[in-house]
Amino acid sequence: MQPITIQHILLLSTALFFIGVYGLFTRRNMIAVLMSIELMLNSININFVAFNKYLYPENLDGIFFFLFVITIAAAEAAVAIAIIIHLYRYNKQIDVAETGEMKF
Image 1 (cartoon, helix red, strand yellow):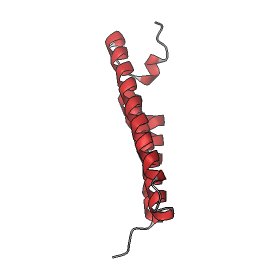
Image 2 (cartoon, helix red, strand yellow):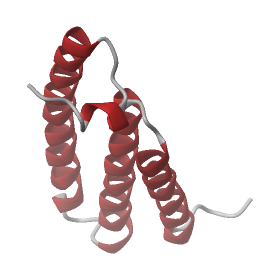
Image 3 (cartoon, one colour):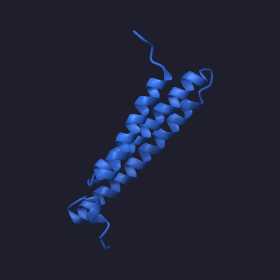
Image 4 (cartoon, helix red, strand yellow):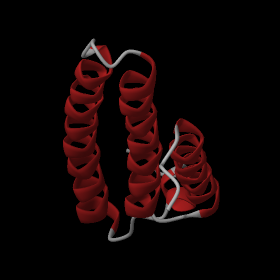
């Protein structure tokens, strides 16, 4: 059994990032768009941890960046879900194409 190298981890991270980009550009539901953004942020977190483990194992810089990004992602998700709930209560739909034409 071959060991997991940094190339394997970067391949996984790249695949997750582009799945998130695909979901961001093709989905019309705001919840799905939010999930795609979260997927992209998590792929970045995988990069931080991988580079920390393989390039600088004695430092914890990658782990601190990971914790920072997770904190920002949680705050972003909370604000985005609050906005989505407000839009749903106001319009009874959360379609991205339709929300651009709303007039408050």
